[in-house]
Image (cartoon, rainbow, N blue to C red):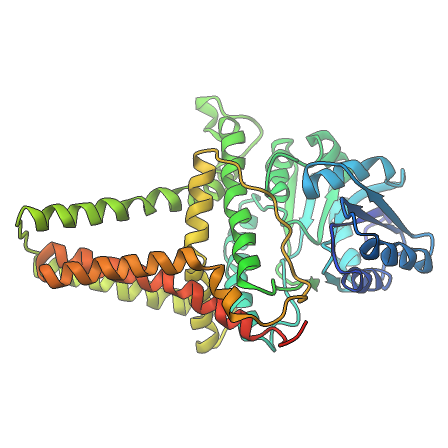
Length: 445
């Protein structure tokens, strides 16, 4: 996309908290190379109490010239959303567009030139390139996580764009300033303030654009604990969005808001419902185990028809095969990459379930920064300790399955035992991935 008839001034905002200065400086150096004539860069350092982290960044902004401004603030709430809202008073009055870049992101020089032209259409509220990653090829955990991430941006985001229901993803987003201001700014109450904003912007009648080609790359978390924590936030936030906006997303005949289209209602609602039901579905396992125990105690022996065995086996095998083929055909991963992505996704299961249930029950979880600094050193004991819950659950599922097999190894009860054993494998993938991630870290800090 070429520039439109007029060059729009862009305020590029880089929120950061307790980031290693070298990491942020590299990001700023990439922004300085942007092939675009009218922009500013606001570095918004919030609640970083250690001056050794933010002073070098402040000095580097001075060296980069007046286009770069460093803002340091302490005592604000709302995490990233709070920092962006606080910075609104410092935006250049010429700015028509607001762009957000994560502190670890290396943007392509063509980023603004490739996106700003879309805003010649007054109906466009935001433009979002895919969230992509860099420097993942040389780490085994990096390869697993990269292909796992890629699936969402190659499928769900594309489908949402086809129905004008795309979302912003927190970095590389370019938003019309008027749409952001009218929507009321960033939602400080939501753990996914980025995708939540898309609901309110679409609610104003704006359309959006999702690009399929990446225009930059960020870093993959350095540990499994950070990877899991990030996914917990991405699970909890969409449920918050649904809880806040479900009335507006109802069908118009049932009192839903306008001017959402039917497709927008479905996609925005599904974005939250999908992860909400993950936690609800997980509650089936305690009931299945209790049913198996009840049948054993009461000496009940319900048989399983051969057709049921065939159906259950086919569903299990085909589900795994389809997931594998999806990664191979859609993301372009090779067979080992696809297998790694499937294992990486399975390793997140417990974190997703916990976050889903917490969100459904409205139990708060803290907003935690995702560590991508690679400042940790290799420590396998610590890596396993972060997955002690998953290890415990894997042992319990194995014990339950083994007990059922030993006491009663036929019929419906056996099918339940096989299901419990499969859950044990799912939980065991978490410590396995944690060890793989730890092995990629340096031996010394």
